[in-house]
Image 1 (cartoon, rainbow, N blue to C red):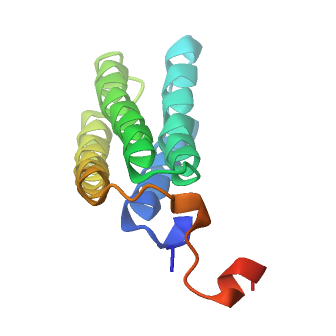
Image 2: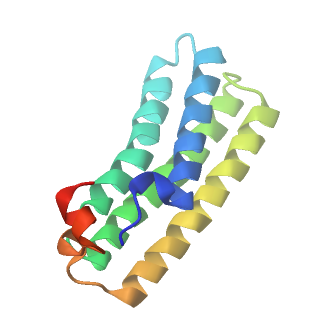
Image 3: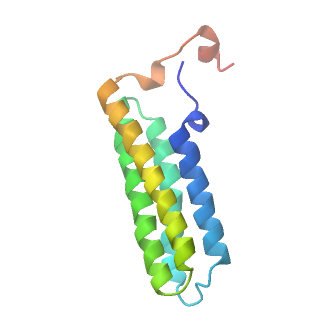
Length: 137
């Protein structure tokens, strides 16, 4: 039986990270740095969106490729948060805490992608564990 998207630890942590960064941006002092704030928000959206898009791919390798895009967006957020800290939009403590979260998400995404490359299942979309799965129950 195929795991639901929400059952992946990597997805849950990525979603938690994205929400935490979004909350940080809402509370930050971005003022004239609206472009930086928007860029960070787009990367946050990309982390979970690429995971979800990859989940729907027909092969494990295709799914893994999307996870690497999510991983790249997580790393981008870490870098952009460092810029935000230098510009005093957020504190260095907030930056460090979120960079630690980003690194954890990157590790989970890379680990899952490596697993998917190794398993290389070719028919993800049609695999059903039982008749109830086929019926959507």
